[in-house]
Length: 220
Picture 1 (cartoon, rainbow, N blue to C red):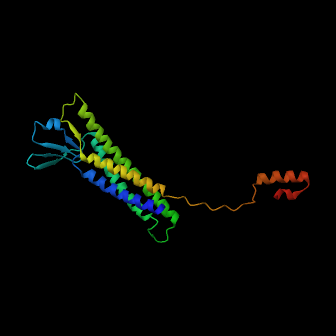
Picture 2 (cartoon, rainbow, N blue to C red; picture 1 turned 90 degrees about the vertical axis):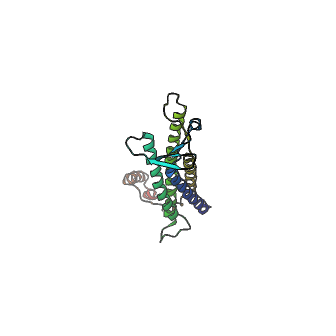
Picture 3 (cartoon, rainbow, N blue to C red; picture 1 turned 60 degrees about the vertical axis):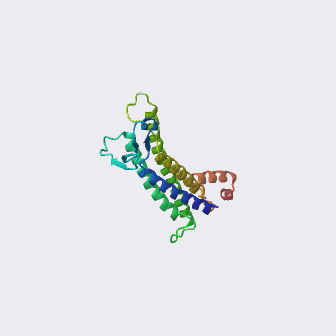
């Protein structure tokens, strides 16, 4: 049962990493609202790295954001979170694969492999949380600007890239949870009973035994 959970968790983690990669490179995190596209023949959409415009004839022109310090704070943070989620997700895949029960890695014990699987599951969860925070923060800004009556810029709506991010975070959280649930803590060996007493306790027992005249009670 534990091995099956591990395999399913790793597969979900791999799929989530692929979706995270597609989400990070997607240029459709937000699209120009159809309410404003009526007066224009162009469709505008933006991602984390560039802004694009598509004409009715099918031609698409994209331009990268030329400045870094001039970008909004939430956009810079979303970039960093998505890159961290990709890096952590890649490490979690490697650790989880090495921690599978069906994987042989030298003379690694089952206990060590179990801990590796648990670590991989925790990293998957962390990667999913980073992705979830990034796409949710970006989406909240898009919704806020859309409903802000004093907003003077172009109004955008949620793009398909955000939905990819939500799907990736859900799979990463699920896969990481399965890997963590598959970990079984090995039973601890019973410690040998020790008859060694502390020096303070020994003096107390000796004093009590001397009063009774029976020194054998000290070791009973």
